Picture 1: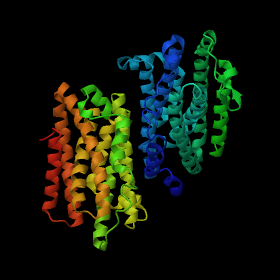
Picture 2: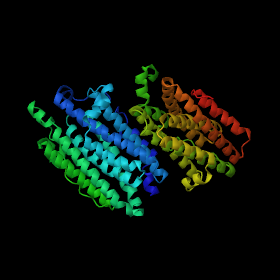
Picture 3: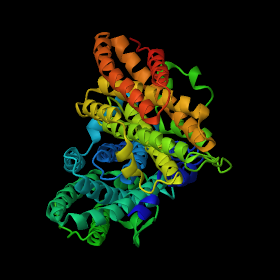
Picture 4: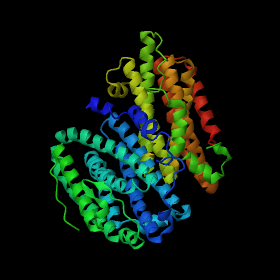
Length: 290
Length: 255
């Protein structure tokens, strides 16, 4: 275990993240890059961009609370130090997505009311399930909830958003690519560290599997709300703006309606959960369909 | 960014509590270092007795850093706003780094299992201080916990590390100088955060005064215990205690 954890040292993190892929960036993107004009001037697309970004802030705030809260219950110093880097990664994500809200025109004094207005209630419940485990200082469940379920979800969501934004919004795409690199590291730690702990405490599995089922339900409900609410696709069609034919897991996102995109994203995330949980010796629990 | 001190107070507050500011700051003195030191800084020969003494000192530094890591991370959920949360996240990674570089130094000095060695050599008063700090954090008392963490503990570390860096071996001295630079930032946050709150609600000062009285006692006791364990001259703990008290007083929290 010590050898694997040495790969997650703060020294490695400093060299690969702040001194690596974030070098020369400002709030996660190249200095001087701007949001595309259409997102600022078209009211439907503008509100859609704000609504989407709010969900990112809400998710990252939960991740920040969870990763910092898990430090005190970590069973060894090396895990505490890795979680220290994850805490700062999550705080950076909160900062860059909050900055995106400002870039989209949200006034600083309106930040919290904007978040309260647009935050998806199912996403808040998803975070609540995780934070309850963290509050109880349940390290094993907390890391599975945080580093496998939440980060696994974030990883696929960010990848899909990256695919959609890469051809038309390089600023936001680069911001997302930095967070994807972070999430990949967090998921890797979760898989590696929890495997050995679950071998020591197999009696924890049923409780953790139930948590995964509950979190997955609220995740699917969030996706259903988000893709059900969006009017962006209709609006792009109305104004005659061609959609980009971005590829995501072999599908052409530019040819899909929101419901098809929701199904693709849900299937991708759940498949990833199944694979990762299986590697840990956990039985994936199929959630009810919201 | 030009000089941050030219910014208006709100912009200044936002700037110095950001990831960007933290990164620019640490890049200045950690760029090109590994485990807190430059490759060209090499170990000087050390007598066995001196090495053993240094191991005890570093083990106690690890207790302080571990308390700071757990304290700062526990405070994130209590922090009243996003900027304070982001700043504390940078502090969490700083404290984690300090723990990591001290552990690495212990291994270089021949300690096979630093965690077990820290457990064995830790000062009892420092462990009591750690428990008290974590109690304050767990009680979600923001002012009391920030005072204990970012004023008392950081001032103790600042005083001791800065003093030690003056006559330490070259490798330990360089590691300590990097750590002290981080501590300055943490103390600045504590001073700013509490200063604004005390100005707005002067009764807070009286409560902080009571906590200070209780924690000063533990800090001075741990300095005395360390000096005694290390066989240093008796007046050393008084000198270090004075430096610590002066550090706290400079932040506006004198007796």
